[in-house]
Image 1: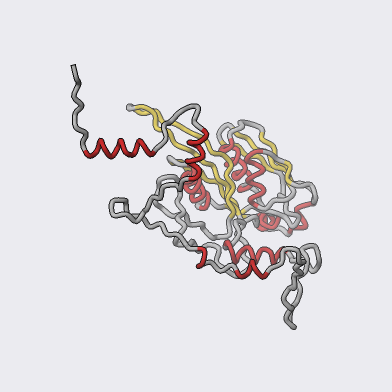
Image 2: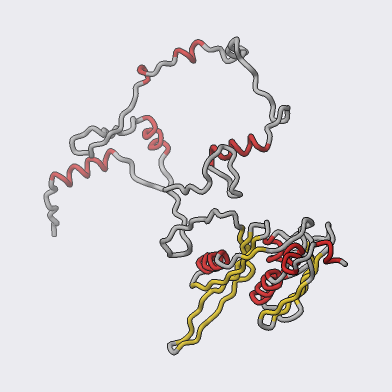
Amino acid sequence: MATTTPPLSSSTSSSSSLATHLPRFSLFPNPTTLLSLYSSKPPFFSLSSSRSLQTHLSCTKKDDIDITFFDEVNPDEDITFSPPEKPEDFIPPRAIDEPPFESDEEIAQAYEELYGPAYSGETYLGKDIYVMDSKVKKTTGFGSKGKKEKIRDGFDENVVQVRRVTKVVKGGKHMRFRAVVVVGDKKGQVGVGVGKAKEVISAVQKAATDARRNIITVPMTKYLTFPHRNEADYGAARVMLRPAAPGTGVIAGGAVRTVLEMAGVENALGKQLGSNNALNNARATVLAVQTMKQFSEVARERGIPMEELWK
């Protein structure tokens, strides 16, 4: 029975004709086939065809490149470097390790020109260190919107203690921070204050404000010590103060030492005899100092000259 072959379409005929020109793939190709592949020209694919995608690739011809420099240069020739001539007013820079060296003040001035006044509060260019930059936002605490303004009244602040305290109410506990601050000008003026707030910074500010409202004057001699010994109680705290010879220093501890140093006392002896509570000891120290009197004041109250006080 004879079989009939269906007619080939145009696509089938084109593919069969292409297959006759292309070599058949084989693991062991014929050497003549390899020679014919190398001898034939590779197919050329055009990117500028109407059916292909529009691309922006461009190629530069060899004739458009200037290669005259490479033609004139001899690779075996030694090329010597000739630096440009120095101008007449040229001054060579000095080495880093050569004098004269910059002083600390010149370095601080250069630093201030770049970064502003130092954090220590000193300025070498006459700038106002308390003027705040509008781009920098300083707040009194996390989440608060008030600006922190430093009070310039000549008093220094020293934080003695910061504790977390709680108040038990019907709905639970309210946690706050309590700060004890001592302010003084180290010239005989000192004050103790306490403040409570939800934030530590706000509590310190309140305590500093309270301390400025309770400023007292400390009686001192020309040797920066007490005129006489004294003791005072505040609550369960008891403080003993004694005058000392010049060069002794402040021999005390805790809140007593802080109060004496902020007041400007340089030679004194202090001792805590009762409770160790910082706030009570600081207030007991203030009370002991407040009840002291100068010799001139005692002589005036008695109506006698000062020379008769030691008879």
